[in-house]
Image (tube, rainbow, N blue to C red; front, side):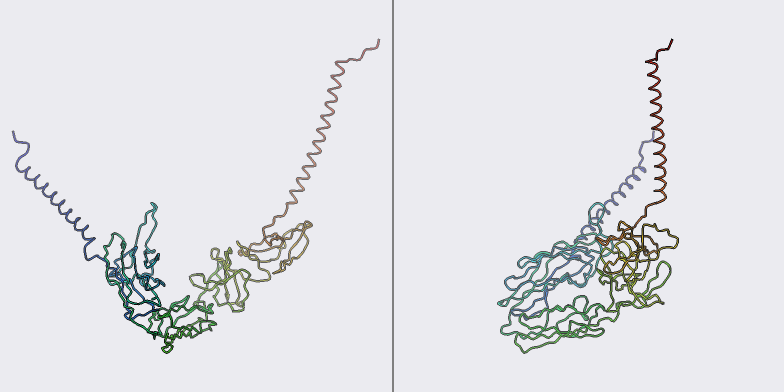
Length: 493
């Protein structure tokens, strides 16, 4: 008899088992390397506090940049804890890095300690399970990136040196891993200057509602920006580099169309040093993009125009920039009203205001004397169709609302109605409530039905009377018959 296992079979099984063990070993080595690779030294992010300033004195502004050595697709970071000598300086402000525009920062400040976290809001997606998931690619850089900039003000009595440092970096998380971090350098600045300051520079410059070019630098004195046509004044925010420097801003109000010049004069504490910064502001002559137009549901084309400065709009409407047909254009809106008011030219009539419903794509001209603005629709006074049979109880009448005179009809009960058409051209009678000025659809009583009901009532009343008479007569006859049977009359002999 042959043995159940021969040598060849045994050797073949041994080779198979050895191959499986080798694969498992290789997979284990790869997995170990992959886990270790997530925390190797090359993936470390160093967080440092740095400044370009070297010579500071009492009352000076100190600007500290908190920098990450690299930013490999970080979706959230922090809390990063920044510390400074609170007995030497006061906290003024924080500004997030210009490269991290997609991030939302949160901060808390408490006696020399600032705690900052950042989250890339373009990537965070709430999942059904309540956990946060991420998709896409966040900001990526292998070069140093400014996370945020902190501005401090030295106290007037400060001396010695001021220290600024990072005490904790928190967690830096990418799409699929947590990046190791370390604390880098801090800032140690001597407060060496004494006597009156000759610093006439400014530490920061902002113009509300716009962005200046080039990017602000204390040594650059000439800037430019532009504002919309509707802007007549701008707020200029200036922070002097030294507490005792005098700052005078001129030209930021009553802006003209076209070019305007805003001057910022800074005089140092010593009263001698002086600098002038200049901002060239261009007030646009038009808020309307070139060739901007829209097409209504009927195929009619309207061109957007700027409304005249003396244009009269309905009560409660205010100007706002809105996207219409893909263009950012000036529009007049009112809370609760769906349609927006636009200044348009139809190619035939004079330019004027039109109500536009973006859902229905309807455009109707605004005529102050005959237009009524309701929250759900825009109504206009129209003529009653010739084939409409108005009930005799309604007589022609008019009513002065204070803003317009309504032509309509009134009955003996004082109900005032008028015929109006909506944005779709559909007309109907509306009831005007004189107490609160509200308008609602009015429905006339159906006279034919009323006459029919009256006729049927009379018929059923006659039938009821006849039935009652028959019942009475029948009851009388039956009663008489019963009486005769029970009490028969005696027969005569």
